[in-house]
Image (tube, rainbow, N blue to C red):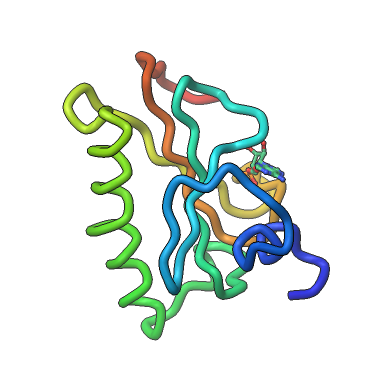
Length: 115
Ligand code: AMP
């Protein structure tokens, strides 16, 4: 999508502090980190949010959750102590960038409930 900032980051048009990339996904550091490790995992394909997911996205979802995230957690050394995944969705969910992204937060103890 031409006016989507995460499309531009995902395809390399806008630079980011990338920590992982493959054919379908890019993971990069959040500009405004909320934890010592704060990574955004985005599909390269424009999908607005998780409410737009359908059965055709099963392979992508499995890739993100069974391969990319566990690998990032190991590489960032937070797999053992733990981390938090957040997917803000839509207005009430607090989503500010309308391109699906998973927040991976770690390196500190998280609290609950979130704000
Ligand atoms: P959300 O509120 O869940 O939509 O999250 C959007 C996130 O994107 C926020 O944590 C922002 O700090 C982050 N963000 C926005 N623009 C950029 C950018 N150019 N590079 C890295 N992170 C960004």
